[in-house]
Amino acid sequence: MTSLLDQFGFLVPDWKDLVEILVVGAVIYRILLVLAGTRAIQMLLGLVLLVGVYFLSRVLQLGLIRYVLENLFQFGAIAALVVFQPELRAALAHLGQNRILRLFNRLEETQVVEEIAEAVEELARSKVGAIIALEREVGLAEYAQSGTPLEARVSSSLLTTIFTPYSPLHDGAVVIRGDQIIAAGAILPLTQFPVADKSIGTRHRAALGLSEETDALVIVVSEETSTVSVATRGQLERGLDHEQLLALLFAGTRSIGAVAR
Image (cartoon, helix red, strand yellow):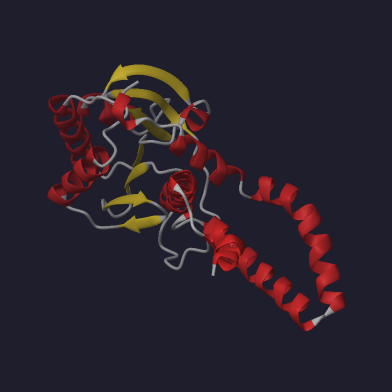
């Protein structure tokens, strides 16, 4: 009995092992949260399938399949770094966030959300197209750099002015960080997924694209139909009224504490 315990004693974890398991589990969970709803999760499932086929080929002694997969895995790590680059960057940004150090004034949050909702309602009523990206945990500085930098407090009047037709900054996205508009006229990435609804335009595709690569909450106003949509985590909710938009904005900002840097 003693010898049996000695042989399999490594299977009984001590407190250090438990800590390591918890840390690794938390990291994997955070990464999966970032990948959820993006094209990377489909690639990850495909990779898991290939690994399963590889181990099956070893068990069944399928030499050719094992040889091909071993060579594929040898260079696959480099390819994965290129393919998963946006998702890896988002995951690292998530891990680097310290929620304890983030402070947010609830009164300011309410004012910012109401200013944005008021501007969206006015733009929709006037049939003026717009796209507004709200930064959350994952920074949007990379996308803001493609537009004109601004350092202005969020206000409904400023947002409606920016999107006024034929104004210098109306063609592009506004990027908001905390209570500040940090850029206007920004170019956002278009979604790489096929879109079933062929009626949606470039603004909606750009909103989906940004929400697939980051955790941003992106508001779109359609100039053709005056409908208001919100994209987040690769999903698009369309036809929102004022109260629904307010609810989504409050939920989206309070869930992470609206970063104000």
